[in-house]
Image 1 (cartoon, rainbow, N blue to C red):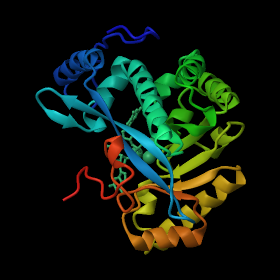
Image 2 (image 1 turned 120 degrees about the vertical axis):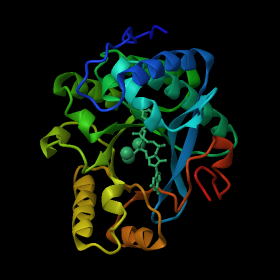
Image 3 (image 1 turned 60 degrees about the vertical axis):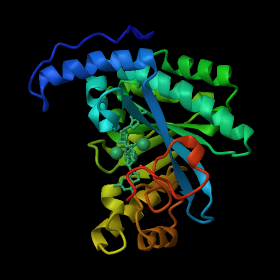
Image 4 (image 1 turned 90 degrees about the vertical axis):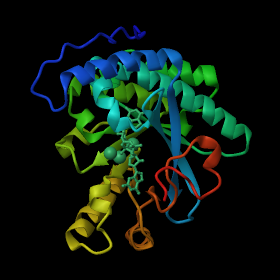
Length: 279
Ligand code: C2E
Ligand code: CA
Ligand code: CA
Ligand code: CA
């Protein structure tokens, strides 16, 4: 498969990384076929507005329906996709499919904004904003109902190109979310000047927040930081009522986690309980 952006080359394993080189090349070759044969599937996880308890959006999370190995989580194939450059056409597939699904649920009366995860690799492609604009136009989706989630680490990867790409995406009206906040090595100065609309607090800090004073201090200051930047604060990995109540009291805007719903194929989102990994 040759991605339209032209970066879907086979990477010669350079060593020094974790994992097995042979296995990676196998995964890369298979993944290329998976894109051609439409073996990837999207699951969606709801986001909840903390104040109202209502669904405030959904995040698309990719899986691979592998012909022999079953349904694979992203951790099984995204590292190989990142290394080979296949992440670029993969993300484009996710965007197209997720926006098409959003059109369907909008027709069914669900006005949910959509969040899509984007790799640093995508942000290094100068015409990525134009791609996003074209897909939005093709599906008729409203830019303000799309948020692209970028990991904190990606923000630091190549300041010039990434910042320019994010600025252009912001100008389109698309939301920009900083994912896994608190786990990367980004200095706060990387956030300055970027059109950030949301900060997602990594679940490492959220898990213990009902009990652990240090987690509480960190989560409180990230909420304050988000609000100071004019962004929403979203907590991920909310698994208990205690955590949810603590977040509500702390003024967190949105929350996501198994407490509210696991990732599921989209027709199941509206009706809890959701299935993946349950029981
Ligand atoms: P992420 O963007 O931080 O997504 C959240 C991950 O945490 C998801 O794992 C989700 O299933 C899981 N999760 C949600 N709620 C809870 C909870 O309450 N407790 C626990 N323990 N886990 C929870 P998943 O689906 O395996 O995705 C892993 C990562 O793979 C994502 O982390 C994201 O970085 C990446 N990813 C997934 N889909 C895509 C995609 O389409 N494109 C790109 N570039 N990356 C993706
Ligand atoms: Ca995410
Ligand atoms: Ca995250
Ligand atoms: Ca994560």
